[in-house]
Image 1 (cartoon, rainbow, N blue to C red):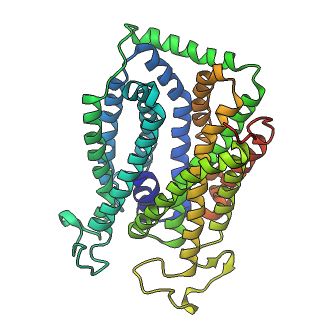
Image 2: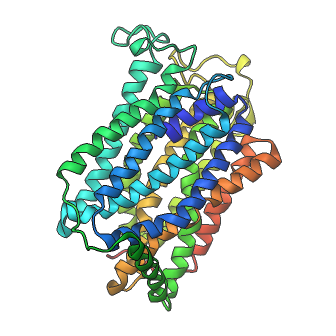
Image 3: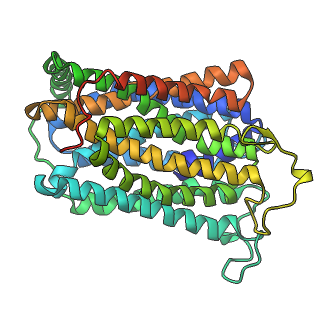
Length: 436
């Protein structure tokens, strides 16, 4: 949340690259390559780890690679004395791949950590605590680095902590180091206290071969289940759109509104709170209208949110021309004082609710379209489908941004992906029943 969405990447685009259009295209290009790497390797990693047994050594190795890469981002400075731009993009792409690996490995630790009877409870608690920590970290960065020197409130430091220089963008550059430290500190007790799976005695080469065979068997066992396969095809499309929405939220706000870390952190905290509403709304809507209709409504809500968001810039308010010089500030606060800014925030609230709800309903939908005895097989394919086209959204954004020369038009393919996924979803014949 702090690196990709709300702080570091928007800083990179607005202050290091300084051209939001070119910056959006570069970030999309890096995400595209990361998506290709995840598509080709993450499913095999999961299958290989299953064959070998222990997950924690793999997780420790992955985190050990992430920590120094995160710390290197401190040297992503404006001007010529920092890391080169291609190197920074390469580091971000590599971190994207490694982060996907940590998701695979954490998921693989869920059963040994919680036991089969408490998997759902523990999974939900883990997600809730993760969001809680993210919001708390955003609040700390806001208080300790973004607000000092900009607001004369008694409880806010007069200057950024640790003597950091705002002129040299050190408050933004320190964020990856903070994230690296928390990642390392959070992993240590997991490695010490969480139970692991017993070793099978299979060596790496044999595990790779057996893992590849397991993946082939997944696809073989899925044949003949039309609704499930159509649904997984739809999910590949709309999940890529949902992921792209998250990746480019901060980049768009930084480029089109000129928001810095102060505004983006406050924006992120508000959206995180509304994401909780989305999680609660998804369960209610699934039960009222069935997961297929619920997911369709949620995806269309995401599309509406994005199209409305693209109508808010410093010179547009919901697609109507807006001259800030002719309108008084709507309030006297330190940020979000114009109608377009508040319009973008309102669209963001709708997006936060519907994106979170769509992720939740997509899992429920799978349970309604597969035979109960095949649920394990199809959840394996569910994970593969989520990573198979991670590159498509960034690729389309990169192409559209380069061709149009516009941030706004460059993001339109995301809505096209979401709509195509929603249309494909309608060819699934089951999943409309609201009963579990």
